[in-house]
Length: 226
Image (cartoon, rainbow, N blue to C red; front, top):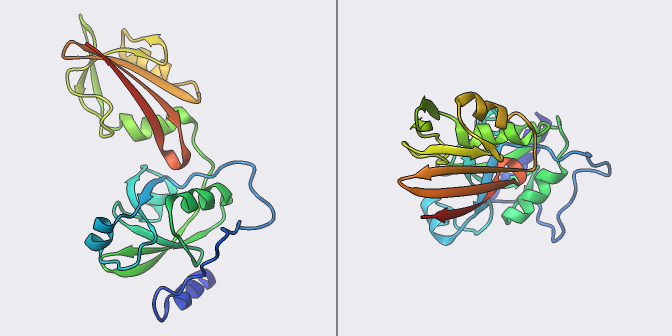
């Protein structure tokens, strides 16, 4: 409650946040593990600022939330603009990444959020990151349904993350040939720093690889062979 009160006091009279040239760490003792917040953000541009009713160019906008994460537990929403963390003005995604990498697991972080043309204060508690394969499942495989046919494993219903399309034939996952739905589960069980997927879509072979980034974000590379 004290942290929330202090943040509101900083807001009185406009966006009165601390604004240092150097980004401060949260304390002398840093966590040995990168904490997970469960959200993906991007820098604001002029169109975004106008659409949300902000006049000053600072803050980052939430573009994606990971299900069952600290961000969703804190009731954050896609489209929220985070303009301060622990009372300190946020200028860019680079600063946001710095804050997340220096936050401590289990320690409350106070976010000042711009939503529906007004400021709100939200408390978020970072957690220890999930294994990469679980992050991948949460981000890409939610809602996906597969069926086993004579032609192999076929996507019957696309996932919410947009990885698969209806009718895709899943050929390989993490280097493992996919001949059954059980093969998919087995291929995703082991934790690893990258994940590879091969599917056949309308006659084209599509190969995609993913490497882990911060806050549940993945960096991907795609190769399409006709």
